[in-house]
Length: 275
Ligand SMILES: *[C@@H]1O[C@H](CO)[C@@H](O)[C@H](O)[C@H]1NC(C)=O
Ligand SMILES: *[C@@H]1O[C@H](CO)[C@@H](O)[C@H](O)[C@H]1NC(C)=O
Image (cartoon, rainbow, N blue to C red):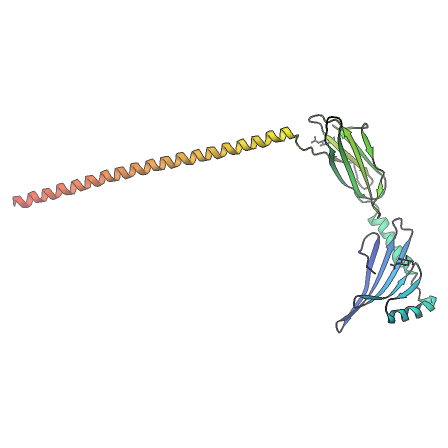
């Protein structure tokens, strides 16, 4: 048997695990519920080394064995009605489900998404969908607002659909002819919400505006790149010019020192000659 994963539809209670010499045994108690909580099934399983060998099922109120040893045990346990574990349906499963349905499940907020199913074309109006998921209990109101006013035309909706567990979902549609600059929102009213929640449709930019935006950004980036390149170029040029100028002036000063020393030398020559 596959163990149930803990959820609102089933509850897994590991009661006991023991380990010895690398072998281990486990007892599992599980409660299974139908969505309306009317039908509850209590299962108690005995495992040895991950293999279930004995199971009690409250629906049949009997034990079943899955190994030779388990079958023997089941046979003897089924002989005496005192071995029934049926009372757990009430003491364990029913008790916990009451706790769930009054506390946890009392109110669960919906997850809401608004998206476009169709944009406007030549012969069809645009269509939006507002979906509310995973709420509890049943009884939600979803409406469309156009610039803050409730829309009644072009609105359709599914029923509140059960998710197969205790949650519900609903899909509401709006067919409309878009007007530029308008604000379309989906308003959700549910007892889990203290006030109506408004989800505004985040309209993507129309294609021509988007293209204009892209071209604009491209030109802006191009402009910045050119400006930076121009600046760097002029910086380089002026650095080169400064470098040239300094090397020129250095060579001039070198020449002058050379001529000074040579004139000094010639002066000295003159003095030695005169002495
Ligand atoms: C318990 O027994 C009922 C009736 O035979 C069966 O439908 C159900 O699947 C059993 N449950 C488990 C978990 O074996
Ligand atoms: C759109 O309208 C809703 C409801 O009237 C409002 O809460 C929301 O702030 C508006 N959003 C914008 C972007 O105008």
